[in-house]
Length: 281
Length: 344
Image (cartoon, rainbow over all chains, first blue to last red):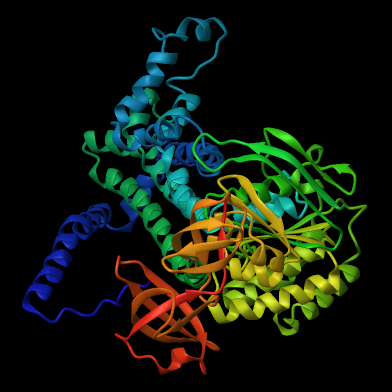
């Protein structure tokens, strides 16, 4: 069913509500963003670039990208797999699985980091074994990846589940009766049908993975130039009153967020027709 | 026999099951599985397609044990109510799908596939639609593409699951004729699931009537219509008026009159049933007395509703030039069945 197209507000109440919504949004979103940029460029371009040329900051940027590059594909695969299971099969405990999937949304990120310390830290369940075999998980890359994966777990799956529920299994069943094998069904029918939603989920997941602070903070150990991601680096710089450097780093994260937002908008705009066709179909 | 379904039983934890269902289809035959929702007809179709496995019983096709083949190896053409076209592929790619996914050594050449797609587009009268996407087609056109796609793999058996269920009445009737023609041209054995009795009687060589997972009757359309075996079949195949009466010696006795009866019941108290067009209505004479409630056109007939004193409403049909045409709403009339049916 198609809803009535919206119209420009005509009544005083309609105008007032719209105006206050815009005002509120400016106050809550646009103003802080403006602050980040003004603070970063307060001393002009030279101090800004100098702040970013710091080896620790460059290491932090690299680590942030590396963590995202590992966690996002993991979550994409997990998201497709779990969405497939949940929408294609009926089984006991499905409701429970859906609830668990949402847990990272509701639970504090600090907990998401802490669990790995409790499991793999020196005093943790597997700490002794890991030390004996010289495997480092917490306060190293693996721990930060685990924490990021946990926090960003639901993004892809949550994007795919409603779409795949809506599309149903008829096309896949038809493909099977036409003689297609499992991989053929997946790559020729399932994946093309979910590709835009998948890309969208991956984008959100990436943005969140790069910006994650709480969980990563717990498992990182804050070793400068080694286990500091960009958000952690910002905190350190800020606490040392290096305002320009802190905001310069923040502007990079903000920039990444804005790029994500633009990509997302482009996706929605470019494929609006196709997405709408899916809904009509 | 081409398809032999033997004592198939299937139960689910929470919906329609099948209980010892058996039927057969001859080569080139068009079989309709007819029943209300929950009768198990779609379950039966899924078992034939290999999308589910029965708890017991056997399905053989041309002497081959179908249950030992999985869905993709049965080479069955299936058409769904939802069309189930691949939405991101063009019409031509949809039709070619079954050929394109074959293992390299069994796959026809690109030119052969293209020729096959062309000839199928011709068959379903969509010559100029090969490059379109499913969302650019009407419902009826989509279902024709779905049929072409199913036929592309040269199926041994064609299964149709309420294929016209989502279409409007006019398109439905049109496609029905067209489907029957395609069937006669290709000669593929076909099993068609529907809850629409008119569709089943109109299309099929033989109809299997299902109720609560069991077969009520199998027969040719006319046979079902003339010799329904159970009250369910009679009621399901068309409107049925009911009256209480006494059966004795092949006729049913009512208040002051008797009517010839087609009966499988023993003599004694019966619930007699009669069709709207197997009755006379007049102002005087024997019959069930009542008042005319409505007079409406029903194609080549007039359809009357007659309310009896005890609140029962009879539906009757008469020719436009019969006595019924002279009646007005509110007239006192009598309804006299010409033939009644009773079931044991």
